[in-house]
Length: 395
Ligand SMILES: *Cc1c(COP(=O)(O)O)cnc(C)c1O
Image 1 (cartoon, rainbow, N blue to C red):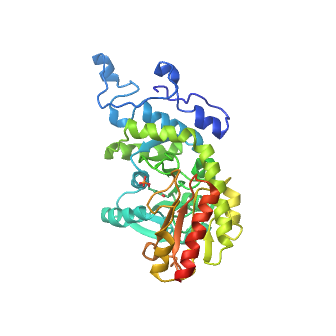
Image 2: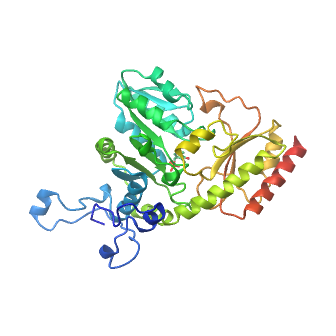
Image 3: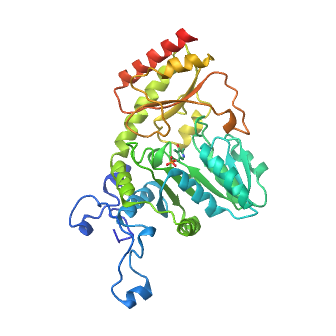
């Protein structure tokens, strides 16, 4: 699509945006979906065309109609100025960080951040002369005490990876802006259906599109959406670094987005039902799901979110490693694996003691992260129930 404005605009519902935005059948011989564009070279007809550089596309690395179709949808959903599709969720984080920082600057990162993002900060940004510090995800406006004159970026992720703390985005935004820093929020869990961080004061929103947007565990992508003020820095850094997302990957993201609303609804319902049920089980010490009244940030979640995702955590009562093996090794419905967001349920025992430096993780029992898929909810429950029985016998 060469037209920069989305096909439909105005105050349409999210479901309508997901199904209609980013398509322009008139430009595709009437075909409903924007097809996969593969291409590096874009041709200029005349020297005048080459000189003015005003064609919609100049070179494939900057994007093509397939990548732009995805960007339109996310821009509308997030209420952003613009969006860029990038090769992975991690690339979205690293580009966003580099867009805000230069040598001599300082960044504050939530202690609950996605671990590869933490590692990028420690393993790359520090080497480039940026000071990297971590903060308590529940710090809220207390962040003001940590701000330094050279703090230029604050990275938030709500809820936090693996530990599911909800962050006070409006409070963090106010502190960041007062200090001349930008607030970047990883919104992968809620998706723009259930939370829109830009409307809460964030400057940049990133997504692991690999997860809920793609929805089928078969492609990698990330998105970066920004306010008008933050856009130029993000687009400049992405262009300079040469990040490109193929039309093939973009097509899979676009396809996934068309059903995002109904998938999220089903994931949400099942995840909540399973989380509530797990809370009643003897072997379970704690369930970490912000949609549960027992969650310490439940009120904050109710204030800023209109729904919840597929992913949550739980802690089992302490037991030897063999009991954990008995739990996961014979599951019928759940599989063990990284990532999430597909149609299939996943259950992953995780260890986070080394991934937290500000708020030490003190639970003695095993922490699990589960992604509740689209299987029959009774089958999901039965699988967990059998796993809990095996766990109890081995404990
Ligand atoms: C998976 C994930 C990422 C990274 O996405 P990739 O596409 O795997 O690079 C970033 N943030 C969160 C919250 C994630 O779960």
